[in-house]
Length: 250
Image 1 (spheres, rainbow, N blue to C red):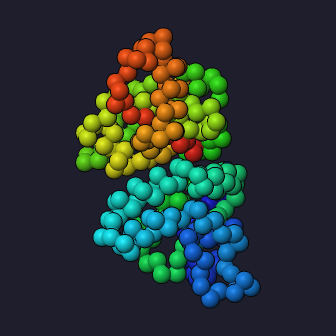
Image 2: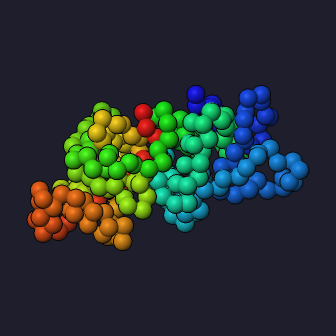
Image 3: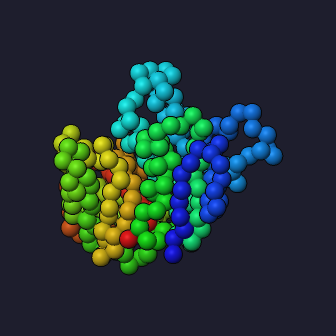
């Protein structure tokens, strides 16, 4: 049975059943002596990056809104170093351990705080995903469910996919038509997705890749897997790759 995940500020009094108290602030609280720490461990990578923190508070430019902050934070959780710490958290929770996530003492709006987003990721599904097995990776089709950016209605689309050979909890999709509308735009608004493969349903975070090395690998893997159905040269030159990091199975 999964453990309970609570959220609180680091200076809120401890309560029975808190379990492991995890500080998820980017910066350690000032003026707190080691002997007075109210947390058991400090996992700063489960907090907004320095750049995102600055963008939200408008340190170098106009502050970003709550929706953009949420989107960018979720994408950060899908890549290293946050990805490894999120994996540890999910493993502990689904192993039956209770956890209390602690954020800044200045936080007064839990609904828009990253601690709430981290909690949502930690309790998703019924068990953590460590790697996609070979049989599932060989399935011919994946069904991706996104959330409509305007309607809020789930939208499911069949996709060709390939599992990453180095991180088997990452699945690559190749997008043939990645215009400004449609499900790719949904990902830009809401990165959290569901991916059904061979009757198994996974919760994940999707990232539309640019033109870096990861995108090149993604294109090559998907094109190679389906080369008997479509020649690599037949893919559009502007076909864009999407990476989905799987973190729980339901």
